[in-house]
Length: 301
View 1 (tube, helix red, strand yellow):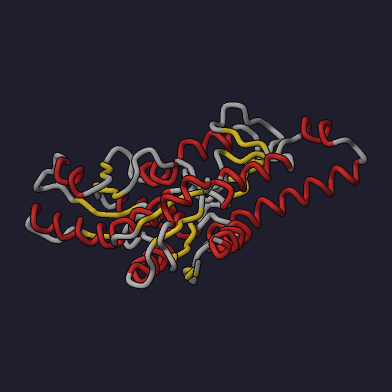
View 2: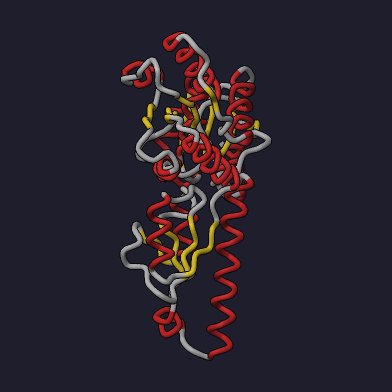
């Protein structure tokens, strides 16, 4: 089977920077253990290397870091003095950051620059009295962080139907923003809907990452050339799931898996029967080695 691979598949800048920060901390910890000539478990008791939640949404990558000694904590209650906490690429809420700083732990901020910019922009609009309408997944960690910069003046919607159900007030000063990995087309539609509903243009923040837009556009472009699409990346990754959604919306038979080994013979037979040309893309948190392995597998069919 012939494979057409999307040009920008794989790590984005924010993910690369976050993992580089984590790697540097691992190197530093390893150097200190060697200098002090102490076993790892003794060093670990003196100060752990922690990520607050998965640093990126790729379970396979996180498992590799856990095997290297990184601890993934889901909340900050167990964090204490001497610990080094790497802030995930998705960012964290302001109150969580405050509790971490009060804990005595050292914070290493690996928040994606695009997410950080979105946080600051939302905070600035909130300071002017604005009320945030955020296009995103309400339970996503990035969204929880973004909302914290809008105080109690915010509402979240996941699609146009949910936006239509929001109890909007005619005189309120709304502004529109999005989770950085959301669909740009739907975001623009949301702005048009709000203008029609409220009778005025709503201030809009450009918070969707260009890398997200480019990946989604590549899938749309490939839809006219290939017969099926394979999306590689974490099943818990929002931007990866949206690539699969875009592919399906454009009429492609699509499968989303984390690695080549996840494609069973039954799944392969049901998906690729009669397929000669398949597209291949990957989320922003998918390592190059996983993409290469998938391409090799598909070309072997």
